[in-house]
Image (cartoon, rainbow, N blue to C red; front, side, top):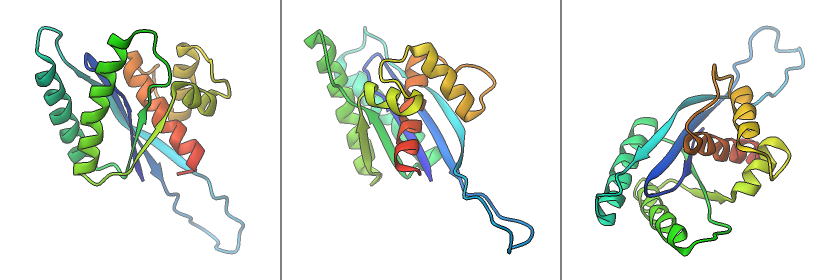
Amino acid sequence: MIIIGIDPGTASTGYGIIEKIVPRHRGNKNKEQKNINLFRCLGYGLIKTTPAVPTPERLKKIHQELLKILKTFKPTVLVMESIYFFKNLKTAIPVSQAQGVILLAAAKKKIPVFQYTPLQAKAIVTGYGRAEKKTVQKKIKSLLKLKELPKPDDAADALAIAMAHFLLKKG
């Protein structure tokens, strides 16, 4: 199973891809074997757009880049951060527009979509819904056995949302 996590935005859309690894059992079949869920990071990054470019073109770029990522990694599930609270309508509308093109890309590829709020993802990954970003990054680094903290924040958040789904659904 391959899970892609998405942290939507029009300026910067973060993505992170993790894979569930099914352990192959070797040795004596009579021995009790643990059913351990393992996972690894396949990649993460950003889809960036420029504010000087008109919104329709920015959304088109997000859509096209995401389709390339979906074609490359062939995820079986897409998990996206949902808007749960906003202080500024000017922020909520562009994020919602980015979510729309992300949902369209998932629909085109027939990939099921799940959504979690940042609070839910943090609670699932760290045990505390109001965990600091650095705490989440450290936990993701540890869980995925990364050499360094995942950066930038949008990509780290995308890995966290993918990992939250994996941990909640147990793959």
